[in-house]
Image 1: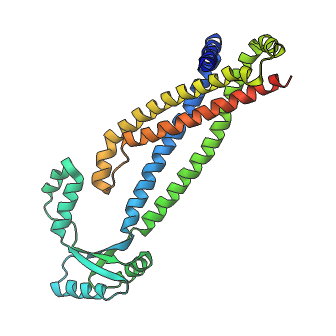
Image 2 (image 1 turned 90 degrees about the vertical axis):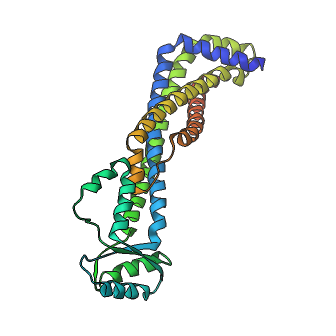
Image 3 (image 1 turned 30 degrees about the vertical axis):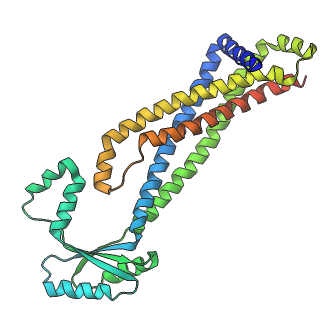
Amino acid sequence: MSRIRYDIKQAFFQMGRNKGMYLTSVLAITAMMLILGLFFVAFVNVDLFAKTINQDYNVVQVYLKDGNKENVNTEAEQTLKSMDGVESIEFVSKEKALDTLKERWGDNGYLLDNLQDNPLPNSYLVYVSDKDAASSVAEASKDVIGVDDVVFYQDTIEKLAQVTRFIELGSIVAMAFLIIVSIIIVANTIKLTVFNREKEIGIMKYLGATDWFVRAPFIWGGIIIGIISAGISTGLVYLIYSKVVDIVGGDITRILSVTVVPAQYLITNLMLIFVCLGVGIGVCGSIISIRKFLCK
């Protein structure tokens, strides 16, 4: 423990002597993690949204024409029930659809009370066995007499999947680039510290100090940079994400029936990721910067 305390003390001493460069490193890594954090929260929420809507793969909503006679709607229902892959059908009246819409609008639902006529149509919710059946039922339902429109979420889900993959790929590319830049910045920062202590390091080596004895304070310096950067960037992501959730989170839930990921849950996991990432960057940068001096 005394050795660790000595190394950490030396690390803070080095940071004190080179405040400007260490501050630059902290700001650079913080900016990198902030960008990654925003990519991360966007990816997690889009992925959750896609998975939630994916559950609706087994539902096809068939809207009926206004003015249909009851026998037309009944025949349409029988036709839908007879299709392959259909498991059950639920009738949704225009009144029930309006009530559901009011619930989704939440506090703004009163605005719908001023409508002179209910603009929503009657519809059937057709539950099918699998995705393939949903596609065929959705296509066949368009030709059923009395049907006005058919809504199936396949296109939406596929687009969301593409967005999710794009964000995931973008996150990986951005992370790789920014990590390399951060390691270079940390390496250069610590390299300047090593230059300032080059004679001291030479004396220590001459007196028999091991490579790890010389290297340890610099590695601890990199670790401290990473931890500080992780703390700052996590706090910034939390503030930004919490503000966004407060502003639009409720509207997203009401309109899309999809909840956003709670800020506390996201930030707890993000903090762990950032600490590991920051420590890794600091250690790599430190080892790279001092390696050639120890090889002399």
